[in-house]
Image 1 (tube, one colour):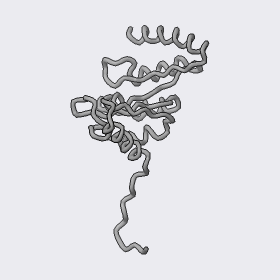
Image 2 (tube, one colour):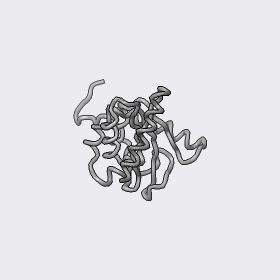
Image 3 (spheres, one colour):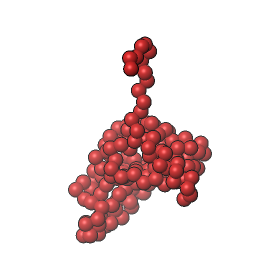
Image 4 (spheres, rainbow, N blue to C red):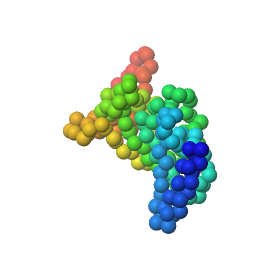
Length: 156
């Protein structure tokens, strides 16, 4: 029932967006009480194929959803539609914290984020510390992971 109402509103919004050459982005929720969730987002993208519709992921919602079960197959289905990501970090109680100082596993999120063209850092507050933390995290995520050195002798 909930998804039917969402689809009805989305259909009307897509008609208006199409008239104004604008795209709408669906941001899938991570918990059971957020609509649409990742599977519902996938269903909407399939139903409205060809419309001005894309997906935008939130790292907080994605991380919460991953705790409920594996997300790889769903994210693979969404990848061609993902145009952006909101970067948020969180404490063990799922409260927002400065980027890079929380529970988000940025190395595993790296695979999700790198193909996405637009990123939006969303720290819990706007301050010099939050801007600095955001920049450090962006550098960390975009930097290639260091390869472990093989034991033995290395010539210089």
